[in-house]
Length: 173
Image (cartoon, rainbow, N blue to C red; front, side, top):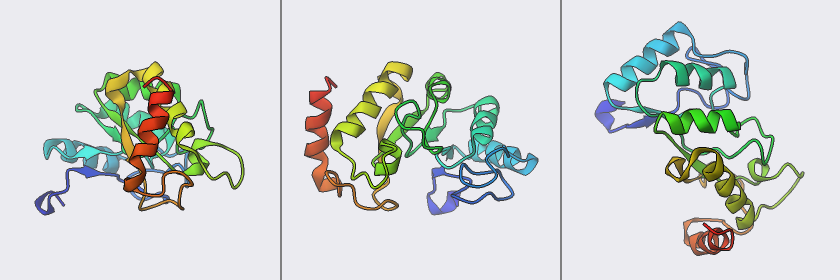
């Protein structure tokens, strides 16, 4: 994967595997011994580990074993919306302490717990403000997850970023 140009890799998706549990399957399972070896090898190659789909236990294993910054490429704040894919305040702090970044996820079900909620740019801004409050502005980025979510009502694609810019400005960011 390194030879193909990969520099960011999520060791799991929605399903647990021999590296770790995921937040959708085997959430109590952290990194396996093989997963810890995999993390070490990724760091040797300067490939960032992405924790967005890892189980909480896997997240904490990465936080305790990683020597380099790591990334949650598309995760929001669990304090705002209790989705298991979102980061707790403790996770945001640990990510920031390690010099890592979380990219905001625009998936409506990660922004607000209401069923069939269409999502708003103001929701994204609310998560952004919370993450900055907890971890500082250096740990925040944009992740979107445009390739993996149903269409967001106000942010259906990259061409809608001015809508997000306005929402962030209205939130004082």
